Structures are given as structure tokens and as C-alpha cells.
Length: 323
Image (cartoon, rainbow, N blue to C red):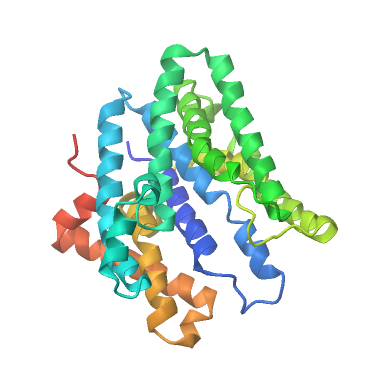
């Protein structure tokens, strides 16, 4: 049976990801733009959790098939961004070729946001290893330790220190969240927490996310704009997963978008944001709210056209048919 509530949660996650990427919301009074971005930082952890949960409820954790699918998605999404790379390099074909075959591209694809797919591959591999070789208790403590270390390094980075270990931990957190989502599914833990409790955690957690970042900025001079993992972003993401799974709602526009287009929106929206910034004039380029609305509508519209009229492209972007 289709979990429409979870699909709606994916829809909200898509919007959360785009809020982080569209800009600084400079059209809003300071510091509300930063507050909006910080309050959306649960979105990326949610998608890691959701991937683990969906693997946990499946009949078989087919690691090979899942990795093959992710590799295919990363490959075709990277091809999509080659024209953007070419333009950013001012038409220098040699530089473009060097960039395509560089270690950065192997690690995270041809666009900044594709690191998520590579991280998810690592999350699948490490979860499979932990399930077969490490006790559940030890695996859980390792997962929590990675989350805390990632949060701490994010705080240190926001204080102006160059701490590159944050990016390694940000990749490794994919294991922590995928694993937590997986064991929550296998242990049927989600249904043991009511939606009222989960909603309280979600709303209060978002408030704490904003307060954490604001007070670190006010009293220690931390950069609010660059904060990526407030400590409560993980509990908030878990709460949204619980609400999504436990909510019995009818199919609607939001659930259909979350079901059919959430991955695609994640993959193509930076392409549209780039065009919005460079090619459509300052009215939209300098207004994050307008970019958010227009790029979201365009992303869904493009994916709808691909799904219904050019399905081969839609399938490639979503890894459909990969074995």
C-alpha cells in the first residue's frame, strides 16, 4: 500500500532543500532570511533517513541493485550539468575535460549538490557492513557519534576555522541516518511514537534549530548562513519521517509530486537556479522567494513532461530499470 503521508513529507523535503539552495532571502528583513534557511536544514537528513526506512521495509536489502541504481543516477545527473560547467569555465574545453575527469567529479559529480548521491552510496555500503559484522548496539553508538562529530565540526567551521573534516563527516552521516531509518523500519519503532509527540518534536525542534544558530551568532560571532547541521535537525527529520509514515491520508497533488518527482526535483533544480540567476534579469535573480516558487514549479513541470512524453530521460534520472 502506498504511503501517501510519506510522499507528502518528501514533497516538503523538496521545498526545504530548495530553500537552502536558492539564496540568502535578502529581500526579507535581516536576519529572517537566515532563520528560514536554518529552519529548513532538516530536509537533507530526512532524505537519508527516508532511504534507510524504505530499504528497511522492503522484502530484501539488495545492496548491489541499490548501489547500481545510485551510480546510474549520479552518472546521468552529472552529464546534465556538463553544459553548466562549460559555461562556468567560459567555454574552455580543456579545463572542462580536466574538471570532468578530476577527483572532485569522481567524489561528488559535476555539481555541488550531487555529493548527496555519492554519500548515499557510502551509507548503503556501511549499513550493509554494520548489519553483517557489527552488533546493533555498537553500530548505533557509532552512528550517533558520527552525527555529534559532524555537528561539532559544523559549529567550529561556523566560527571561522578551516576544519575540512566536516565534509568527510557530512558524507559519513549518510550511514548514520540511513542506518537509523533502516533499524526504525525493521524494529517497527515508528508506529510506537504517536503523531502528536512527533509533531511536538518537529515544531519545537525547528525552533531550537533556529535558537541554536542565532545564539551562537549573537554571542560567539558564528556565521548563520553557513550552518548546515544544527543538532536538532536530526530529531526533526526523524519526527517528520514518523508523521509521514503514520499519517493515513488520501492521494493528492503534494503526495504525487513527492512520489514521482522528489528525486528529480533534487537533481535538476540547481540547473534552473543557475539560469534564474544568470539569464532572466535581476528582479528574479535577486529575489530568493521568487526563485524558489518559479524553480520549483518549473522543476515539477519539466519532470512531468519527461515522465509522460520522454520517459526514457525520466527513467535515467530516477534509476528506473537498473538491475
